[in-house]
Amino acid sequence: MGGALARGPAAPVVVELVAGESARTDGIDAIALSCDGALVATGGAGHAINIWDAATGALAKRLVGHGGAVAALAFAENNGKRLASGAFDDTARVWDVAEGACARVCAGHGAGVSSVAWSRDGSLLLSGSRDKTARAWYLSAGAASATLAGHGESVTCGAVRGDGAACATGSRDATARVWDLGPGGGRGGDAVYGVLRFSLEGHGAAVYGVAWTPDGALLATGSEDATARLWDAGTGDGLRTFEGHKRTVRCVAFSPCSMFLLTGSYDRALRVWRTSGEEVAPPLRGHGGKVLYCALSDSTARSGSRDGTCRAWDVAGALRPL
Image 1 (cartoon, one colour):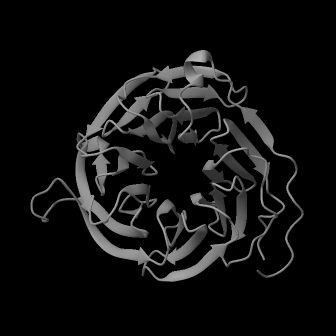
Image 2 (cartoon, rainbow, N blue to C red):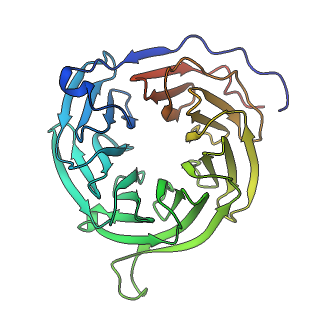
């Protein structure tokens, strides 16, 4: 850990989600914020997805359709009114949030869907399942899907590279895997394909978070072993390990410039790191429950927690080039 830490960020902006009676019993096992920061989605045991006004914390809408607990949520990067969900009814779904309607059901997994992630342009949805596979759904091609098989345990997380030509998955088998994706062409006549490039090995327990840098050069993973790791996305080589959290690192996110990494943990804290290895600010504390979601812009760290709050931290002072 080189150099002194920057002065701690000012107190975060906190939005408490005000659950009505119908939403209160659902619990929060998944949370996501829209790209424009206007909406928060939460899901849990109650099967419904709750949509909240991020400015007021008021419940705005409930999306009903899943037949099992909701385990994963993700807003499309290019459309803050388009939401993906994964549930223990073995399906992923795409929702038109403005209309409050399900636009597509992605069925094919043999067990609960525990992760969902979008390509940058919104044309591809990646789902991960307890059936030990991931699927890449090409929504513009009638939801044709490529099955990514090889993990030894449940697939817990996934991320699509910016150009949509590769993805990464993480699993309870303590590995992450990188896959090439694309149209079938000469590959056996399949409409789409997914081919394993390499496996990322080094964590001592389940991998629960994975993210690409915007330029696709690096990958980060977060694990139940309480560490995050940085990898060369071109070769699969491990570059460094980030230590400091006390419990599972559930989520990881890069800054737009790819120089900084945000990690969120079940220890209720977030940490901001330079990708060269050093922590650049004191831990971001205040959540009263596990951190389930994090995102990092040029100046703001955002988080969502099982405690029913979302927080926005001003970290501009820490995100300075060397």
